[in-house]
Length: 282
Image 1 (spheres, rainbow, N blue to C red):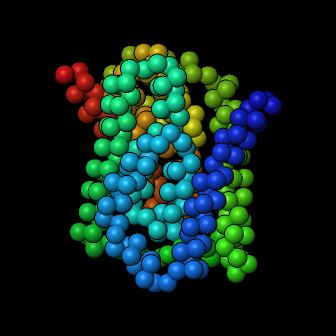
Image 2: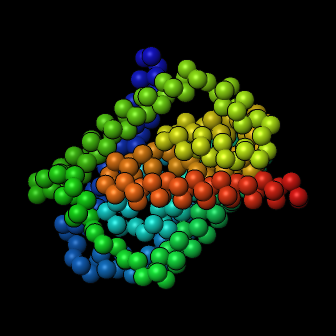
């Protein structure tokens, strides 16, 4: 049990810098910049899904958490958020490299995740613009919802946000780590193994586990031959670390959060099925 608590502390602690910097940036935008800067951000976000998709493949799980905060404050668009979620590599890349996976395999997985994330993000933003949907609230609205006493300074306010979120993440991560420890990878492998049709659907559910464990389990099962390439891609696309967990904590529109979760899962599973079919054909 002590090892489980230690792992939860480590998983939560390494998110602290990303969360703090994200909140600090949002506080700065709210308190120190004028309407011109925020207008510039909104007007230049057409290429943001491309940037988000490329940054997402960096091997860490804090960027998706920071993106959730930025989306809740309406600093980034829905398309950019999904691009980051889908491309986030989490612990996948270190495991692939440490296990000696072929360079071509590593490059193909990273390219697929980034490409699918960027494409999905651009399409989502284009569709929203075409439908005339606009951002209705801003950073100040989220700040008021969190009761952060922002008048005491941006550093103190950012720290206040960060501590609250880290405590929430630690509690959930502790429960998840305990469940995965006692359940083990064998059960997950037995569920997904030899299920070519349901493989991506089930792997996508594993990917939704809101911490770094999801990408670890999926990558290891793929390397051990417990799931095919399409199922692995589905799980890795749906997995965004604690990003979705943070989104449910900081974004108070529960219906919107559920739609984003469904969109993330649907895109991941759909792309995984197509990739799996293409891999069998070619």
